[in-house]
Image (cartoon, rainbow, N blue to C red; front, side, top):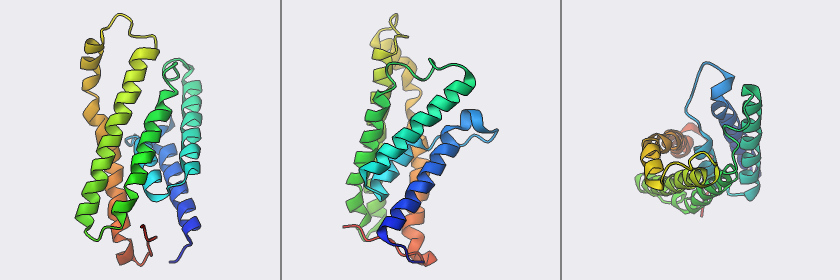
Length: 191
């Protein structure tokens, strides 16, 4: 199979958008609950697409999904607090660190490339976690009675699960990417 660079980017974007739609909406869409792929989608968009329109489109999709699911639940305040815009910061960091990983894709040593990309994903996901949770603490208006240390203790238990989901999807994506030539699929050359 041979696709142009633009066609590859469109196909990857559509796959990421579908993955986000299927997993971000799990809390209202079905009885099959896959881990949310939203964080991974932003990182992978930076890694494999690298166009700012991809980030903007995925962010718009995430907002629409959140509004839709909140409306279906009849509770707009649970998820859409004054801290909600800070999700954009976390998603942008994931996308940006994904772009940093593009150079690693050109590395001949697949294990080294995977380790470099995983390291970038770890840093980006950690920053997104702290941005999301820190902004929620400061701006949601729901934690005035808690000190930052008390809030941190409560939130710390969510850190590892938050890291886990993107790595599930990143691992699968890297296996597909590095196995593509064996499947007869030409990969785009990254510089």
